Length: 415
Ligand SMILES: *Cc1c(COP(=O)(O)O)cnc(C)c1O
Ligand code: SF4
Image (cartoon, rainbow, N blue to C red):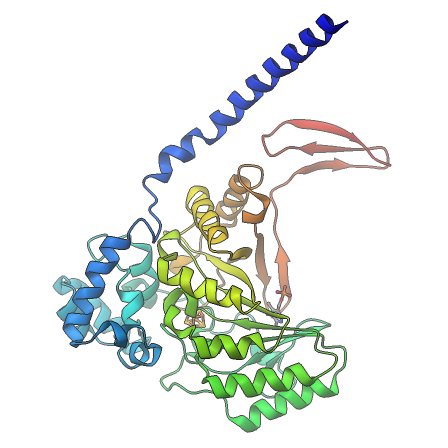
């Protein structure tokens, strides 16, 4: 009896070992590729050297660097300043100047310190520095989302039954070259007027079905501490507003904005969710981690809304690396957005097939926590539409035919 049991156990163990061997094979290519996909932590020395160079140029101190207002005042917005800090080719200079006449640009010294100008495909440069392709786009639309048609009150976009957006500013730490709200990033930086925000609050108070309010922009965390304190406080007082959310890219582009005072304010108004936009593992730095740690300490729940961008992250391994890095700093991947048809950004749009490949490379291959939902925004404000690789091959009253993450076809009894 005991002997038989031992034999069975050995058999099971040897089967399991074989299976483990198979699973190891699945991850082998990624482990090899990982070395070529450095994160912000891996690049810490390079970033530190670049930071020294920028500080030296501005004759500034570490204290200045850690001051988000200093960062905002010293955003790099012209090619002369840029080329004084990092050497650019005459062609690069000319292209940036030409594009800058049509589309403004601005990069915080912090985000600039992550850029590698020696790499023509650097994902940070691609996101922050103007590219001539922006002007070679004849087809894009200014407002493919039809946001202008879904605003029942000042500053508000309402597209869903129980939740809405308040748009509080058009200012950002940097102006992303792929920005989907590019039409709002005009020539002048401005926060919304207090009376417009009052009108938005009045609309929310008068519509009790609104249980979720998303404060966004531009970048909502570029409001002053006192305005944020007031606005979140007002929302907090509305009994039917169950949750508040903030949309911001400062953890990525201006992490020093997450100050101790801001943390004190945010901690007063739970439950508060903050969604940010990391698009590449190179953006996950020790500064970003510090910002995330502080937000978590304030009880904020962090999520990431990446944009799928050609040449930046339209690759399963790049996206896997990003999402795994994000989980390490307690930011949960929430959405991957398919880039919209916005004029001047179309060179970033990958195919939907590529998006599906990215999703295919995540599910099963890594933690479910690292698998966000892939979304296409339906044109004209039709709403977020989830897109998934096909795992359900057929379904009728008796059975379903499924495809597993490894591609095994299995039959499954229905009910
Ligand atoms: C994206 C969006 C929301 C939030 O959608 P979730 O799927 O709940 O994250 C709300 N309102 C508008 C207008 C939006 O575009
Ligand atoms: S932070 Fe957001 S709103 Fe601002 S430029 Fe970047 S993508 Fe656009």
